[in-house]
Amino acid sequence: MFQALADGNRRAMIKRLTSGPATVSELAAEVGITLAATVQHLQLLQASELVRTEKIGRVRTCQLDPAGLRSAEEWLHHQRTTWERRLDRLGGVLDDQ
Image (cartoon, rainbow, N blue to C red; front, side):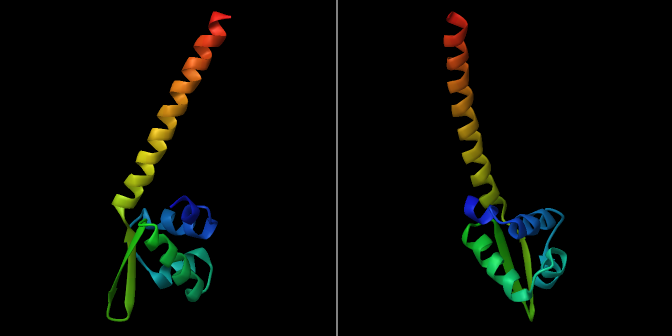
């Protein structure tokens, strides 16, 4: 998931999708890359469960997948909590000296 978010184009797509669903063509135009490159980026975002797509006729529409974003949020929350505890213990040790 974080590998998927490491790329600036994919982050731009995620940012755009926070405003609502968009077609692949709309995402390509906004990010300024080819349709083929957009599809490749979307495949990685889908594999990471950050984005869902639906094809109706010839148009593929993309939207954020809240479950994938929640998973990232939970992991980050756990990491933050762990490091806050560690830093609090370090502060306690330094205060005692």
